[in-house]
Length: 142
Picture 1 (cartoon, rainbow, N blue to C red):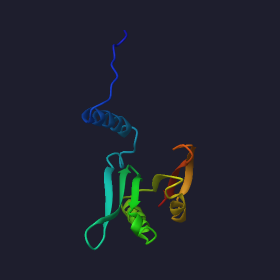
Picture 2: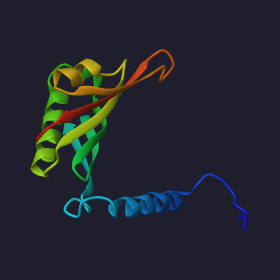
Picture 3: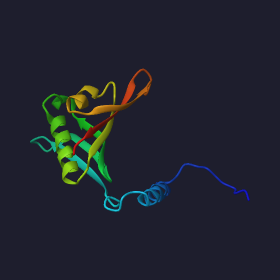
Picture 4: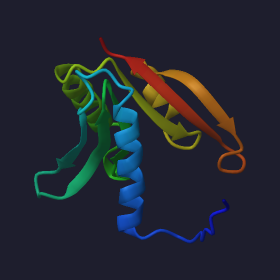
């Protein structure tokens, strides 16, 4: 029997359904003690005037944290705020029983910063975006 199918862009609800179905499938294969460990962990830095000057967006998934975004306002770079954010998420990850952190960055962003903090390259994609490299990093924290 051949199914008639349609392909289109999904709605947010449909995307959420697809994500939840994969999470449900994956949970059947993950050790029971970490099966339900999934949460967003987002940090924000504000100056004395209450203005946002930096932040870190991440997800704890099972036994690791994946940092999606680490950003510090250009005017505050080099003052240690990025290191503070990274140090804080590493401590949170340890406290929650994680064994590693993963993240990615581009050539024009901060590969040296992450290497300085003990992150090791586990993969590189050339020409992504064109003319640059896309680095994938991992740091063991146990």
